[in-house]
Length: 367
Ligand SMILES: [Fe+2]
Ligand SMILES: [Fe+2]
Image (cartoon, rainbow, N blue to C red; front, side, top):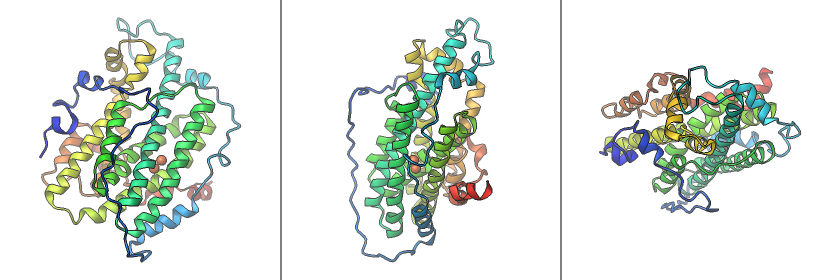
């Protein structure tokens, strides 16, 4: 069993100095190489539909392909600054007198909001590339033909997601950010692990579970009709991807021993902490030229932001529960998710079936 320091590199999960000390040290490099340590597995069992739930997902995915170039209304003109100003107003509701942000008025808060959007969409784009690489790895490593078929459709989905986020950033927003160091550590850990089910747990359950919630929140908030539609399309795919993780792991985890399940619980916890750390947006504050730690404490760690951020775990926790990870062993992950303040989502809807209601067909029928 691992200590907290073994898992996340620090003893205290809320040690802000330790979190902020992790920065991206090769932000100017054009490529980043990671050893993926895995065997490519052939299977000679070609029986299609031996896993009916995966086969059903595969058939759905074949009919749900869209074209990022032609299906989205790219002709829409996006006034990023006006949209940001309308959202952010005069800044947060709470009192900033006597703090490093005391002098900020609407101009600074709008600039911050613009940078924050550039940062957020950049991280989405980098995360999507992580999904592209992880899913290509799953095609190689998973031993079941139905899963290889489905994963192949997901590779195409992820290529499209990287493509549309990159295009939106280039054509409609005002700058890119390099990958956040915490997100990068997480993606590297997922890709480095040789066990095929760990790719699923890290990517389909944790990263994509969080992405599905984050896209859903942004979908509700954004006033830009192009971004709204882009997110709606991506979410329809993303819900299928998370379902792919839940359905595959549910079967596999029944074969694992208690110590093996504990390793999965620890990996889920590590991933949750990394994703939470990245939401401090430290690179944005750096670019705004204010003391990072103070600004993070004032804004990102404010009660309202914290409450908003726990919503990002509203898909992950029920899916971990469905997989039996919350209560296995001595309920270790339940305790850890309690410490992170996200356990209250355990009975929200899981994503094993939810993808049907998020499909583009379902939207067309209800419109
Ligand atoms: Fe994606
Ligand atoms: Fe995905």
